[in-house]
Amino acid sequence: MMPKGALDQERAEPGAPWAGSQVLLFFSLFFLIQVLAAQMALSPTDTVEGEPPVLTEGTGLDSSDLNTADLNTADLNTADPNPTDSVPEENSPESAAPVLTAEQARPLFLTLALGNLVLILLILIYSRLWQKHRPETPSLLLGRNGTIFGCLKYGVLACLAWIPVHLSIALLWGGLLQALGHEMVPQQAVSLFLNALQNDESLLKFLIMVNVVVMAPWVEELLFRGLLFRWLLGYRSVLASAILSGVFFGVIHDALTSIVPIACLGVALAWLYHRTGSLLTSIVFHTVFNAIMTILMLFGSKMMGVAE
Image (tube, rainbow, N blue to C red; front, side, top):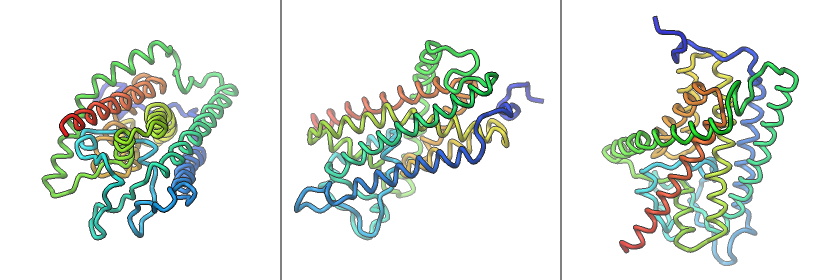
C-alpha cells in the first residue's frame, strides 16, 4: 500500500471554491479574450496601406499560442526570424498557422495583455470573496502557511531544477517528430518575437515580453492549476488531475512541436502546486521559466546574426 500523501491517494478539500460552472465561466472568458484579440489583429485598419496581411488562405487565427508562448528548444531551433518574408506553400500541411505582420501583432498583444489583466483580477476578487465568507479556506496564492519569500525561493529553485528536464524532453520530442518526417513549425509568438528583434520593433517586443513573462504565468496558473487542477481533484486522483490539466495545457498552445514538452511542464506545475499548497510558487516558477526561455531566444537570435 502506498503511504499517505502519494500522488494517487490525496484529494482536495471538499470546500474548494471552484464548482464546474465557475471553471467553465472563467475558461470561457479566457477564450473570448483570444477571439477578441484575433479580431483586433485581423482588423483592416491595423494593416499597412497597400500591404495585405500574410495569411494562409482558408484559415482563421488561433491566438491561444500567442497568449501563452511557453517556449522549448524546438521553437528556438526552427523559428524563422523572417515570418513575413515567406508565405507557406498552399498545399503544405504545415501552412495552417497564419503569419501576422507587425501592424497586426501589436493590437493583438495589447488586447491580450489588457484582457488577461481583467481576467486575473476577476479570479482573484472571486477567490477573495469566497475566502472572506469562509475564513477556514486557505489562501489561493499563499496556501495555508505559505509566505511570499518562501514562494519566491521554492519557485525559483524548482524552475532551475526543471529547466534541464524540460530541454531534454523538448529535444527528444523534436527528434522524434523529425524522424517521423514532421516539419518543425514553431509557435507563432516565437516567429513574431524573432521578427520583432530583427526589425527592431521596440513596441512589439515590449508587448510580447509583457504577455509572455508577466501575464501568461498569472493567467495560466490561475486557470490551469488554481481552477482546473483543483476542481479535478474533487473527482480524480492527484496524478490523474495533474495529467489531465497538463495535457489540456499543452493542447491549447496549438503547436505540435510544443505539445508534449508543455504538457509535461503543466504536470510539473500541478505537482508543485499540490506539494506546496501555494499557487504563487507555481506562478514564480512559470515566470522564471518564461523569462529564461525568452533570454535563450534573445541569445540565439544574436548568435544567428553573428553567424550571418
